[in-house]
Image (cartoon, one colour):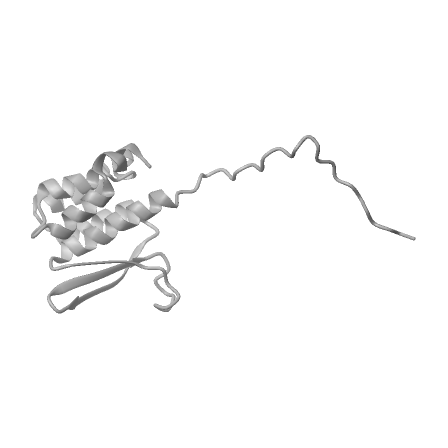
Length: 154
């Protein structure tokens, strides 16, 4: 787990998002603090756009821009409003049928908080399933192990 995600304790961040009544600047910065790609981009135009959206308190647009920046392989699969709550699903394979797709879903009464809840869940999932960029090497065989050819050609 990265230091930034350990610092923010994603389960508590998920709980904070779930219990929040409305989006705030402090909550958005806490979410951004756990981002891995955002600091490496420096002050690029895309990062500046996210900051402008936060300054304007355009929370939904800021959430979508942050997702585009931080999770380039993930896309919004579904946004729906039902019985007073927004339901948001993020997916890596949006073109697959629902029953084949492993989408990450979240819901909240506020659209930006529903989007960001799904975003944080994807980040937690990505940390849990992180794979090294270099394949793992098999352990050295036992010193007593010796391959034997046992074919009978007679």
